[in-house]
Length: 114
Ligand SMILES: [Zn+2]
Image (cartoon, rainbow, N blue to C red):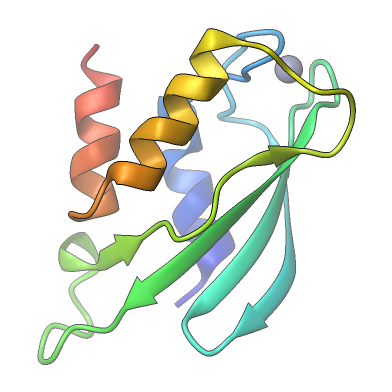
């Protein structure tokens, strides 16, 4: 699975926690990949805020090729690697992602409809 393409498709549902611009055109860089775990650096093109997103893919038994059915669990949390951020929206994003246990696609659909 191309994790960067996966994130790219869905990044538009999120806003930068710093400048609140859509992350649709953010920079994505895969930092690490171990088994089903991926660490991706996301950088806002507007304010250059960079944070890390850790993803763990849960492999489905028999729906390998069905992208919409992919179960994706976020096992880490986004961490700004510049100045500490005390932004309610970022905290909310952390909380949402760390507590979410269903398909990531469902989460993103919910947020896009806010
Ligand atoms: Zn930004």
